[in-house]
Structure formats: C-alpha cells, structure tokens
Image 1 (tube, rainbow, N blue to C red):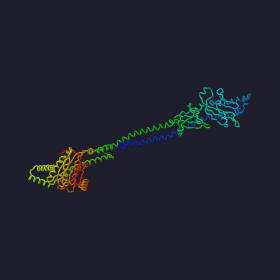
Image 2: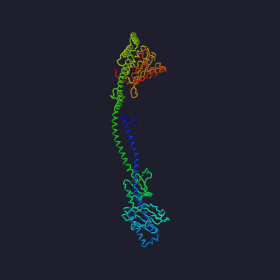
Image 3: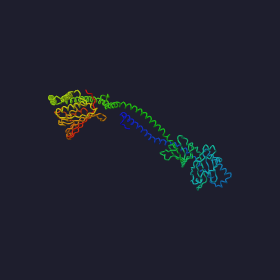
Image 4: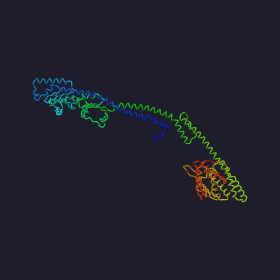
Amino acid sequence: MKIDRYSLRTKLVIAALMCFMIPLIVNYFLTTYVTKDIVLQKAVSSTRDTLILVDSNVSGIVEQMLSLSNIILMNNEINKHVKMSKEQFARGNNSGQQLEFMRLISNLDDLFAQNSDMYITVLGINGFAYTNYSFSDFNPNFFHGKIEFKELDKLAAFSTAWIGLQDNYYGNFEAKQKSPKVLTIARTMKNSSGHSLGYVIVSVNESKIQRQLNSYSEQKIMLMDDQGTILSQSDSINIGQQFLYNDYAINENTLVYNNEKYIYVSEPVAGTKWSLLSLVPYSSAVGPNNQILVTSFIMQFLFFTGFCILLMILISAITNPITQLGKFVTKVNMGQLNIRSGIRGQHEVGQLGKSIDQMLDRTEMMIEQITLEQTQKRKAELEMLQAQINPHFMFNLLNSIRLNILIRGDEENARLIGSLSSLLRMTINRDNEWISLRDEVETIQHYIRLMNFRHANQVQLIVKIVVGSDHVLVPRFMLQPIIENAIIHGFHQYGGQIEIESYTVKVEEESRLLIKIHDNGVGMTPERLQELITKLKNEQGDAAPNKSGFSGIGVTNVYQRLKLIYGEKFLMRINSEVDVGTTITLQLPQVNREVE
C-alpha cells in the first residue's frame, strides 16, 4: 500500500485509527497474557484447597481402616488364639476355651458393628479365622488365591500392604451392585522372632470413597495408586484403568487428558502409597476471565468506534479548507488563472488561501502587462524595420528606373515599376503584422528583381513550396533580411543562386513549418560561423546595421524577432562552408491567425 496516493484527510484518519487501534489490540493481548498466569495460579490454588478437604475425608477413611487393623493387631486375646499351634487350636474343644472364643467373637462383632462399609478378615496360620461378615457371603479361605501371602510375610511387623482395588466379593448380589469394587489393605501378625502368625485384611467399599470424591461436581477427582491405576473416581467406567495423559502437554499444572486440556493438582494421601488427583477443565477455569476480557474489549471497541466517528467528523471539518485548497490549486495548475479560492479565516489555511488569491491577482496583472508590452514591442520593431528602409536606396532606385524608361521603352521597365510598386505597398502597409508564406515569397521575388536591376547582376531565385505550407501565416519581412544578407555578404552584390524550400512536419504531435534558405555564395569560415552562432545564443543584435542594404537588419535581428514571437518553439540552424554556400533553416510553429 502506497500511502502517498491518499489525501491528507485520509492519512490523518488512518494515523488516528492506528494510534488508537494498535494500543487497544496490544492491551487486549497483553492483558490476556498477564492475567492468564494469574487466573491459572488462582484456579490451581482453589483446586488445591478443595483437594485438601477431600484428602482429609479420604485420609479419615484410610485411617479408620488402619485403626481397625491396629485394634486387631493389638488385641491380646486374638494374639493368644493365633499364637496357638495348629494342634492346640484344633484341640481347643473344652467348654472353657470355646466360651472364651465365643466371647472374643462377640466383642469383635460389637466393636465392628458400626462399620458396615468395612470388611474385616483375620486369618491365622493355625486355622483361626474371624470376619465381620457372614461366611456364607464369602469364605475367607479363598483369599489364599487372591492375595500373595508370601509377599506379606516379607513385610516388617506392623507394616501395611496397599493391595488396592479388587472386585467386591462380600455380601449379596444387591450389595455388590451398589459397590462392585473394594479397596483393600493387608497387615501381617508376627511373633517376637519375626515369624508370621496370621494376617489382617481390611476392605472398604469403593463407593464410600467415591461419595467423598463426588462432593465437588466442578472437579474431576480420582484416587490412584503408585502405579497410576485409578482406584476410585466419579466415572465408574474408568476405575481400574491406567491414568493416561499426554506427557508433552504438561506445563505448569496443565495436561491433556482424553483430548481435553485440564488444570491438575495432586496430593498424596497421608501414610499411604495412594494419591489424589483433581482435574478441572481449563476452559471452565479461565473461561469467566476470558469472558470478562472479551466483554471489556467489546466495550472498549464500541467506545472507540464512537470516538472514531466523532474524530472523522472533526477531521473532515478541520481539513475541509485544505481539501478545497488542494482542488483549487489543481485547477490553477491546469491553467485556470482567472478563478479564486475564496478561502478565508484566521487559521493558517485561510491565510494561505488569501495569499494565493492575491498572488494570482498580481500574476494575472503581470501577464496582461507583459502581453501588452510584448505586443507593443513587436509593433514597434516592425515599424522600426519598415522605417529603416534606406531613403537613398529608394531615391537611387527610382532615378535608375526613370533613366531606363527614357532610354528604353520596353516591358521590362514596366515590370520593374510593378515590382517597386508592390514592394512599396508592402512596406507602407502597417495594418497587419502577419501574412501568408506565399505573399512573403512574392515580396522576396519583387525584391530580387529590383536588386538585379540595381546592381546589374543576376541573382536567380528558386522557390520550392510544398502545397499546404504556402498558406501558413508568418511575420512580415521575415525572409527579406536573410535574402538581403545573402546578396550583400554571400554574393558580394554579384550573381548567384538562392533557393527557398518550405514544407510542414510533425514534431511532438504538433505541426511545424520548416523553411530552408540556401545560397551558393562564398560561405563562412568555421570561426565566423561559430561567432555568429554564439551571438545568436547570447541574443546580441548587430551593433551597427548595414546602411547599404534595403533594411540593414541582419540575421541576428531576425532571430531575436522570431524568438520573441514564437518563444522556445522557434528554432534556427545555420550551416555554411567556404566556397560552397550557406543554408539557414527556420522551424516555426503553425499560427492560426486571421489576416486583417
């Protein structure tokens, strides 16, 4: 886009729009960029606070599971029964021992009665078994195929094995439908020498933990183990699956999960190998802030649009005089010098318009004055040219004709008298400065006839005028000084040949008249030719006109006169060679004038 082609008003409007639009856009993107991190940090902080509350509740459930297992591990009666050998436990069929066992089971049932979501299993190596659920719902001996007890034997005393997610094999069908999964931990009962005596297995319904995770619907909270397996989540279909996300997308608490961007916060569950992970959709976290920014941008844009309309109106009013002045100057440049701007005012444009109008007034007056002066000057030169006819020449010429008539009474003298009459008539008539080229050539023919008679020599005139150029108007007595100069200086007033040729040409889509005057006289040396050309360029006329000729006006005066009339469109070329002759070529623009 080339801005130079636009007007000043358009440039001002564009500049104003850029000055306000660019900061507005930069402010929007800068604000979005700066607030993005602030909003993200705020969302992460809020999510973390929520996750801490959830972690507190989940940790309470886990602590309850550990507490129940601790009760069993620390119960002396249970330890007494599991420390029995298989043979002793198998022979414990006396009434006192059975009563003691029944009392233990009753106490444990009373203790665990309020924990309906907890499934407690105690298995002794000697065959001791206790559950807070019915053996008909699940036979605890089946744990030997579900739990690697050998791995439990490797644990230190009071250590916990975080077994994690398992299918719910407790209770009836309805209970399994409500909570199809359970979370299980296991602990080993050991003696003082470190040998395993039994195992405590505590399971909790996954639905109990899921209720804690569902407390905050705006977040997607999940419980995972150290292998990334989802132990509990609001969406049950993902439970038991690996949590897979795009590693490359992790950047400052953000990740991509299931092709959607989330803000994530992770918190470990105290005392376990499990952790809580909260996912908040990125769009919902930063969306309100973006909406505020967009609304703010729209409001600013609307205010800006109103401001731009007002600005364009003001700029239009302020620049209207400049626009008018520009159109006015364009018309003046096209040549309409008679118009005026009429722009006025105390501002700079008003003062400039007034100054331009005054300048045009003075210019028009100067043009009229110069035109008048040039017209008067041309008339004065013509009158001077006509007044320069040598009175002695006219007297001698008339006397010669008179003597010739007395001696010879032939037709030649009559022609001489006719030529003299025509020449005198052309000289005396000063009413019209312009004549046709044909009339100018006829004047030259009369002049040469009289010169041949006066000097008794034979100057031959050859005329080659192309049809169409003979009616072109030229200044009177334009060729006579050149012919006179050729006779006097070229032939030294002896015989010779002069050729006049004319035709029209096209120069820059404009018709021009070319006139060539060639004589076969003595010619000029290169030095003399260069001196004459230099004199023409300097527009210096002859200091002393030749008084012996018809007019006494040389080539330089002709050049000055035609240059004054035609200006830069007039051209004169002079070619001369010693003993060969001289050729003068005139190039004139065709002038459309009416001969008065």
